[in-house]
Image (cartoon, rainbow, N blue to C red; front, side, top):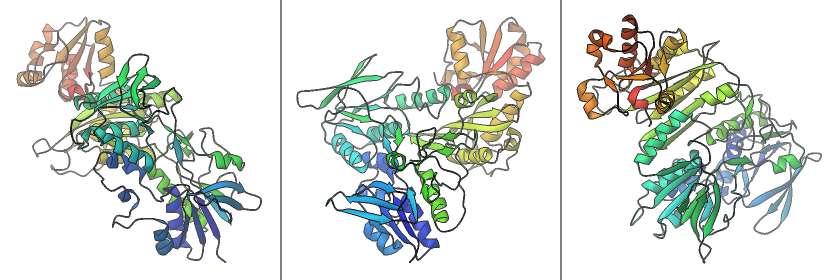
Length: 564
């Protein structure tokens, strides 16, 4: 008899672990227990189904060649037994058994195991306010949620949608619904977020503001800093209004996307250790506190590769990598999963948004001494058609010069630069390493010096005391408080006509005239120079300092990174 492997949970980590274990051990008896109707589901594709870019929901649980990954597929191709619509009720660690119930027939079964895997996933946090049980109020997580939301949105009866929560799921849903080719008038969509800015767990304020500006330009209504107090309905118990302390918003459909919580009840009842994040604690081999029980996916906590502290980062990509490590270890290897950076990427209309490592606020809250730099630039040579802008925020640990994290936003190619920064952060690269990364260059693909090189060199100049800057947030706050500033626009005259400066009272001296006009600027005031991406503004700082003006700064990222 081969080793007996039981896997509880069949969405991402579980099927991956089963497939890997089968490839390594043809004799193992492998069983997957899944409470839902489907296994191996690509939940990350749900917004695209709701928005109509994916028309057949079966595509979300089919292979790349169109084969549905159901119980018959796993039995026939993988020789893995799959029990769908089956609940795991209890783990008997002493006898090494799992007690399960068939939710269709009510029949019970006891499954013996040599090794057990918990891939029980996560569940959406539920709103705890009046009105959550009204009709057309949905969480956004399961395939049934997706069907219900799509049916409602495409019914022709929904004029107003309110999405509660401006995290990854909420923003992707907002884009999907606004871009959906729904017959008739498109619904008005309002996104309500309790925190001060959107995407609060993975973007800093100025980068979030850039995304917000883009979302609003596309027609979304963004309301931040508003906590939903209640939902109100009509006489048919259909939702009609979302009420916050600041306002009331009409709603014919409400989608709640306020976060996830790990499913740990089964593990807790079995006496397994639950970590400080509230998820299952595992070691680098993804073993729980019981060496015969592994756990992976959205139900476990991971180790931060930056802080070396436990973090909860539920992501499909992480779950699949967990599954491979677990599959190896189920079959005699001693493979390890070192940890995560919390890398995130998502699309909102024409923007790609990415983050890896720590945000500035997370780094400071962790006690790190950090410096940041915001840099804007094109993703390939300006003379080659189709270039797009990318804004990068780089976060560096001052004592070691190590890259701690980065955020990227823009219409240009964010993805490849984000992946390069993932490598930098994973390998503990310094800003000096990043400045000399031998990145690929040809005009259709890049500029001669990539925007990452510019970000690294700006950071090096700041650390050396050569570059002195203000961030968009700092300049906005100083202008609002009436600080004694000279805001200096060093762009050409045609540029200023095409895109006027965002504030009145700006002094305009093109960079080519600055050396001869420096005497007209007051040395008693702080001078803040800017241009489109602040490359010329940095040059202006050095020119003015050479002319004897000591209190000069330039605006990080220039107008390309100005979100206000």
